[in-house]
Image (cartoon, rainbow, N blue to C red; front, side, top):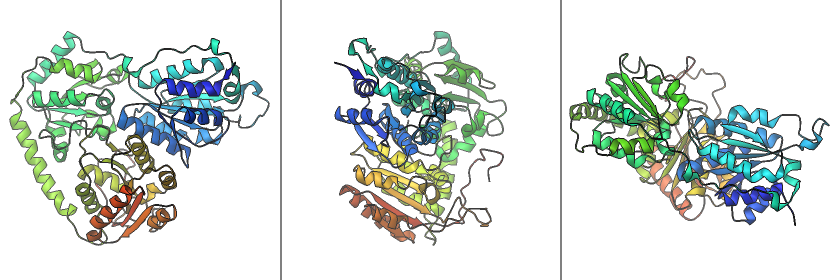
Length: 546
C-alpha cells in the first residue's frame, strides 16, 4: 500500500497542529486540500489569494497558533506575494503552500514553469524551500513550522511541484519528526544583563517603555503588565502591540506620546523594532542624549541598533519574568513623571473630544471613530484599514486585549481590513469582529464579503466613504476621486445586510442593526458618508509623505 506527496502533506498538517487553511482551489493542490478537509481541517476558500495569506495572518495573531494558506501554481502563487510580504513585515508566522510546475519536465516549456516561484517568494518570507523528494514532505513541513515560530517569527513558503505531490511513496520511507511549538528555544537574560537593566532604571528620572509585537508573540502580556506596575514606568506600544497591556491602564498615556518621547531620559525598547514607527528612537522625536536599553529575540535587531546604552538578546516573556522576580512592588519613584504625562494626556484627550463629538455633515471621520469606540465592547476584535480612517482610528479607539487590534501594519498594505476581520472571525467564532475600512482600501478585497457569506463569518464592516483616496482639503491630488461607491448595495447583492448613513445621528442605530444582523448569522456593512476634506495628522514616515 502506497501514499503520495499530496496525501502526506494533508496528514502532516493534521499531525502538526494546523486547524485552518485558506485557499483557492486549483491544481496541483486539489488532492491535498480535499484530504486536509476530510481529516477535519477547516478550509476556507477565498476570492483572491492575497486575502488567504491575510486571513491566515489574522488567525495567527488572535490565537498565537500558525495557520496555513494554499494556492495553485502560476498566478495562484504570484497572487500570494503581497500577503506574504505583509506578513513578513509584521513578523507573523504563516505557513504558505504553493503548487508549482512539475520539475521532472523542467525546461520543456510545461504549463506555468515560466516563473521561478521559489526565487520570487524568497525575499517576501522568512524562509522558502522547494520539496524535491515526496517522502520528505513531513520533514519539510516541520522545518517550515519551526522556522516560522522560532526567534523573530515570520511567514514561510514551501514550493510543491506537481510531480512531488502525485509521486507514490512507500509509507515505510517516511519520517515523522517530533514537533511542538511549545518546545521552541526561549533564551533569558544573564545575571550581568539583569544587573545592567536594573542599573539603568535606577539611574533614570523619566523612563518610558516602548513595546510591540515581540511581546505578543512571546506571550508576555502578563509579565509586561507586572513589570509596568512594579516599576511604575509609563508605557507605550507600537500599533502591532496595542492591547498587550490595556490602553486604559493608569500608566498608559496615549495622547501624551509625543511629550513622553521628547522628555524621556531612558527608553526601554522591549520586543519591538526601532524603525520609522518609533522614529528610530532617536532625535528629533527623542532627546539627543536619551539612553536606550533594548531587549529583543533577534540578534540582528540588537546588532543594528544605534546608540544603545545596553542591549540583550532574550525572549521577552522570560526576560520580564526574570526582572520581575524579587522586585519590590509599589514603586513610587516615577509618580511625578506619571502625573505630568497624565495631565498632558487629559488635556489633549479633552481637546480631541470636540472633534469626536462633531455633528457636522458630512460626518467627520473622528465622529465615526467615536461611534465605533462607544459601540464596541472591550472584547471586540477591531481591524482597521485605510489612510485617514486608519490614522484617526489609531488616535481615538482604545484596545484592551493582545492581538485584538489589527491594521495595515508596518508595510502599509491596503486591502487587509476585510481579510483580517474574516481570519479573526474564523478563529474566534463567538467574538464580535468589526472592520473599520476606508472606501478606497475596501475596493481591493471587497469580494471577500462573498467569502463571509459562504463560510458563515458574520462580521460588521464600517466604511468611511469619503469618495476617494486620502483626505484632500484642496481636492488637487491626481487620481484621488473614486466617487461614492454604494458598498451597501454591493453587500446586499452578495447576501449581507447593508445600510447607507449620511448623518452622524444615524450611525448608532445603523451599528445596532448591523449587530442584530450578525447575531442572526448575516455579515453586515454600514456605509457612512464622511468629509472628504478631513486630513488626519500623523508623523511623516517618508520624505514623500503628504
